[in-house]
Length: 450
Image 1 (tube, rainbow, N blue to C red):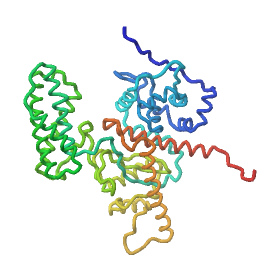
Image 2: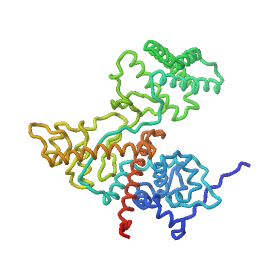
Image 3: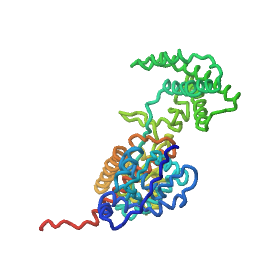
Image 4: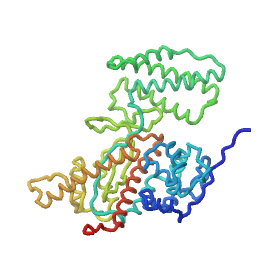
């Protein structure tokens, strides 16, 4: 008889225990008090239904774990292991394990992300949090904006790497296995010879353009032949043993083949929606033009900041021009925080259309002055202060998100799940800022004379 794993028995915590008192006075407890748990819980169904629903935690517990993952900057496994041994994290989630119980399901975070992704959009979560935190925002008339890229965890993609990865999937993971399972003879191919040549190509530190082009042509021919052989087997056996994920991957590989055939005769600039990763086909190359990193692979985000709190205006895996978002961003800010009177943005936003719009709305900007009339002394001081805030506060917030809240390289798979990871990373940083701000306001002033 197989051993059965007993589900953990959760106990509701006692609000009057000494541990709970220590938790409420800690930074984690203050972060807990700064979040609107009831409104967040209302975004998902009360009864957790459907296959794979994480019933161990309610809606509040699922959102709490997402915040904890970003706040602690840990992996899924490390988060569950720490939850089993740290009573403060259990208080944060509203459930305390018994002394002889622990969570053994290390895939629970994956199912939580899938459940939240299915029932609510990231913009709904952000709207609830903005509405709750807007009372803690100082200088709400000042709006700062800038764009950044949150990279995904992928190796630097090249065409030979992508083509060889597709060939490995077609031949080793599908074609050879299917032939063995069905008891049929393998179709003839040059896969073994090409594998030896590919390993020799990878060993070279410097690859010439001719060598790379020769490898690409060989791999394109091999991939086209392998796809034809695999398709014949699938058609004859009516796709037996093929899972939905396999069909999705096969569709991606066929699109990669078409794109690589196009690139053999055309420049890369003429190709749209270029696939750079087999297992993350939604990724696109984001050309940023930075000195140390000319191209980034992830999602481009347009971020707004008011009173030290950052909010997302747009998330997209395709590149976009952020200067076209100025009007929309000011409208969003006005709808939530009231009239915008000062705006800080870099020079890419200083188009004629944006200047006319800001003038019509009586918004002071830090843009360079156009025309013969220079800034007055007061305008120069205000412009320098707004520009300084944008350069320090915004850039500092980007570095804080990436270095301390798990956004330096996003490891989850799926376009919606990556957007959720970015959202909770930014919102966790905001929750810490709100908690510290409230703590400073509530703490009594220090009497220096005493």
